[in-house]
Amino acid sequence: MIRALVLMNVERGKVPITAKQLAAMDEVVDVYSVAGDYDLVAIIQSAEYERLAEIVTEKLQTIDTVNQTTTLMAFRNYKFAL
Image (cartoon, rainbow, N blue to C red; front, top):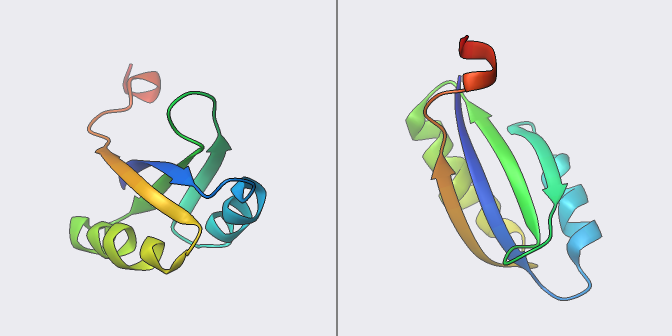
């Protein structure tokens, strides 16, 4: 499976509702509220890069409360690779 970490800036006061919308998506594995420059981090998973691109560029764009995203593609999971 291919995973991406999507870092998000969300409208003020809308973190809980945005997190619930993300969590309801089948492709979203985990959603975290975080401190720092971002408000939420979503872990997205797909079997194909093309589908992952659709999720990030189209499906996440339907959430009006997300102002900005930064997407990190995951290459290797060292926790389970050993």
